[in-house]
Length: 170
Image (cartoon, rainbow, N blue to C red; front, side):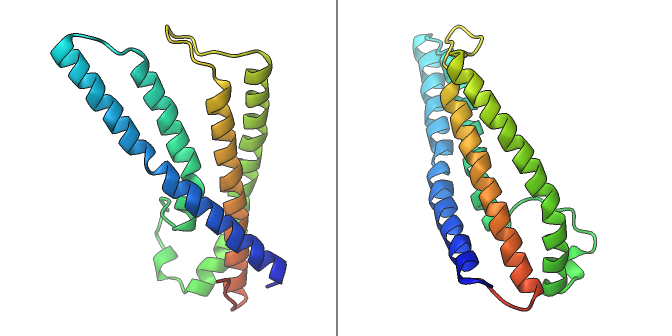
C-alpha cells in the first residue's frame, strides 16, 4: 500500500480511538445524572424534567462519536452464517466489496446531517419541550460523528484491500 494510504489509516485510527475513548465516559455522566434525578425525586420530591432529554442527547453523541472506534475494533454486529469459516484473505476480499454499501449510506447520512445542522443554526431550531434546548450543538456533534465513521469506514476499506492483496497496514 502507498505511504499516504498507510498514514491516512493510522491517522484516522488514532483520532477515532481518542474520540471513542472520550465518548465512553458519556455513559457515566448519564448514570450520574439519573442517580441525581432519582435522589432528588425520591428524597426531596423535586422533578428534573430536562434530564431525560439531556440523556437522550448524550446517548446520541455516545453512539455516533463511538461508531468509528467500534468499527475500528470490529465490534459491530454482523450476520455470520459463513463468514467465520472463511480465511482472513477471503473475508477481507468480500468486505472490500460490501463496505461500499456502508460508505454510500454514511455519505448520504452525512449530507442529511450537514443540511439538518445548517437548518438548525440558521433558524435557531429548538426542541419542542418545556426545556427547549437549541438543536444545533447536538446536530453538529452527530454530524461530526457520522463524518468520523465515514473516514473510519474508508480506512477499513484500505485495510481490507491490503489484506486481500496479502499485505498489512500496521
